[in-house]
Length: 140
Image 1 (cartoon, one colour):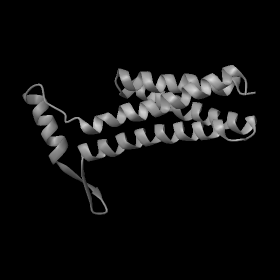
Image 2 (cartoon, rainbow, N blue to C red):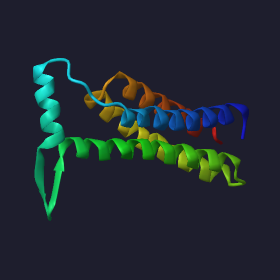
Image 3 (tube, rainbow, N blue to C red):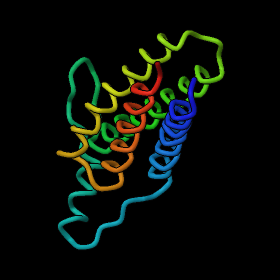
């Protein structure tokens, strides 16, 4: 693996793990309302449980938490797999394929974040997308 590929692979797994850690910090912060409207919204999101079928009753806060946890776990999985494969004696062709898969998945996540998320999430996904794409490009 040449120096450019090694650099982008390293930066990719660091960004993935860092994004997982940063995103996980949100589980330790309690949302606070700035006004009466936000207070009502938070109360409904935390207390109103919709019937999801098959006996499941979940609040929007619980659904949001589960999706949020999945993003952290996706980033952690991607980062740890990339770190492991960068140290393992595997063919560059296989490693390039994994980095192309990362580029595709995190590229889709980046586009979704552009439309539905806020700046820190957009920046994190964008950095992962760009560095994994560069790593795949230089892995030859």
